[in-house]
Image 1: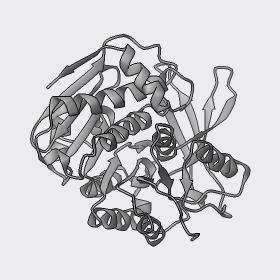
Image 2 (image 1 turned 90 degrees about the horizontal axis):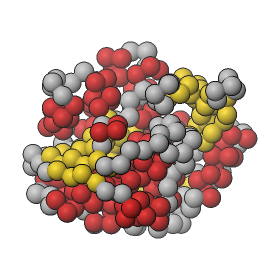
Image 3 (image 1 turned 60 degrees about the horizontal axis):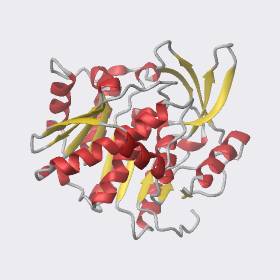
Image 4 (image 1 turned 180 degrees about the vertical axis):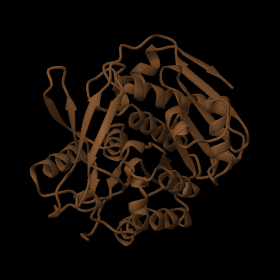
Length: 331
């Protein structure tokens, strides 16, 4: 591995791929994508020094993915391209604007890594305080890569953020997938999930909030962020606090590709701005802090869904929206 020389605060690990998004005329448009890739760009575009840990292909798509990260100021832990090909996803957008995925990920570049390589890259960073993963990195097939790395990051005292952004349609054994996701979430300090993710996990509870509370209490995480689509989002803490927020004005949704990734980026950026420690949800959280975190995350997601594909907003755009839009907030 090349010597890493950057002052990254955040490191991300997981998929980078090309989304072939269906147009109304039946043609497919290739777009840079992958949940962790989108998250990485979204954090960097909001002004946080970020390192992407996985390798990228030497093929045309891999070079586009690398250039997209570099253009947004992301540092690459593996700057030299690898021989493996780029991951692909075919994305059909439903009438409601929700993406439906099919993935092609055998023998691909972003999976050509090891736990040792990820851990070594992070160990070289003096300023690293937070790591993120989730989505396809939660596949049981990649357990030997990501679980030891997550354990090492938690042991090093870094904040571990895991996005339980589930892809059940591409997992052949759904029960094994659920068990592995729940095992991976044991390494998280902060969990992000949607109401749809919770349904996929088959958690007990009559509502998304009850399911989220069950999930949080069954892990070592101190905080969980729960997204509820147009109904906004909630923040739950191990202390038992529940905060809720939503924008009061309607949004013209183009599509929801990358919305959850941009939501999490807004949350991470606000967490860093507040200088919150890894276990911050084990202590009482003020309304002021919770509102700052939730509104930053929601504004980031809203700006994303108003654009086709995942085009993450800048911090200036997020701050402008926060100044312009009214929010309902409850605790």
